[in-house]
Length: 392
Length: 195
Image (cartoon, rainbow over all chains, first blue to last red; front, side):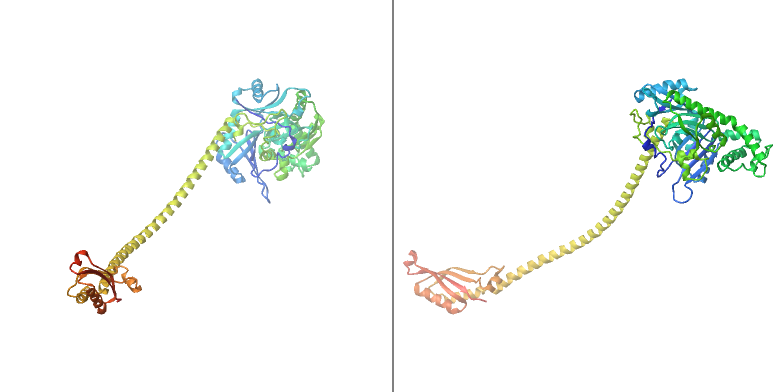
């Protein structure tokens, strides 16, 4: 087991530069169990500043050559990388610890984490972030920490595969950690952030760019497309395309195209009748409804749980990001269940390119800056990895 | 911002060690390359210097040989000049035989010479001194005569010979031993005339 420490927040001024593009940005990776998306920011004047590539893992490892070829074709070379692990394999849980030295905090985390994890502690990679003092309950002397744990046997193969393709992953984050760094971070404002990645949906509570709580659900674009494919008897590729177009049509206000409705008993698209379109919408709503409902319920639970151990504060709004951010049904559910105004916001990264929402998370990772060493937590601890992380 | 990292620390440590090794290896390689370039440059420079040294050394040996032969010539010349000077001095002086002949004719039958010396200018520099008139030869003689009249005759005869620039009587003395016989001792210096 290894604990690597700390990150703690609360300094709004410096965090505003979290997405400031650097001279040489790393490759950003959204890594799921089966799909990887990569983005590299090349801030050259003229032309598309982004290079993107997606890679679908099939079968056993050993596709380093293919991955390399894919990266070369996309104009992404070797180099450093920052990865967001968009997978439900990451366990995230908050702890309230007794105040003490970093070593004492880590001892408490080790002791408490072994109770929380469903596998031996020795097989986990653990890191934690101290929560900002502003989020703590008034008068509380405890220290809030959010603990992230992932099975080592998931992390190591990932690193090996990227390494064999020439990418040295310097940092592995969760989707919320990657996205939160780019939010406005107004003081005293708590936000619900829902980011639908390819294989998972991250639901997070964010305050002043610090993630207070995060949950990773197995519902992502891939699984929703799978459900559509099975219900509508579509090939998975077409179902994915339909999902993407549903999002786009929701964005532009146009109906879903006709070609994607093969197998549907009702017909759809511009050539279909208005009733047909409504029928397809209804059918899709029925198919995707339970998953979207689960997302909304989990969001409500997160908000409630957050208020139970931190200073209660109503979330100002809900930000819906990622490939599914345009789904009307998701917006409606969040508004109805949570009573929050839903803002459909693209991460700041997308302002620099035009690749749609598919590579949002990878782009956030590519522009994710290392934290400033002075950015210490309210408790006065200097951030730093205890066991070698700072050597890089 | 929440800056967690789920990369195992040992991986980061290993990577840092590798990076450090790579850095040092690169530095070492760069240093070796620099040393090689330096060595090549110095070798080339040394080869050029050696070639130049050999050339100059050859010229120096040749010049030294030439200078050595010139020194021998100079020494031979000096020796010849010394010989010539001696010959000139000898040949430029009054012939001794002539002087003795004049002296013999100037002496009276009752007088005789007890000491005779001919002083000449030294051979080296003599030529120059003679040219300036600083150095003149002289005939110094001492003798005995029967009386003062005879001494006067001898001096007059020497002056009349014309071989001397001047004839000076240095002194006439009458020794106790010679007094009984009526004789006197005299000393005369005859400065030789110029060449």
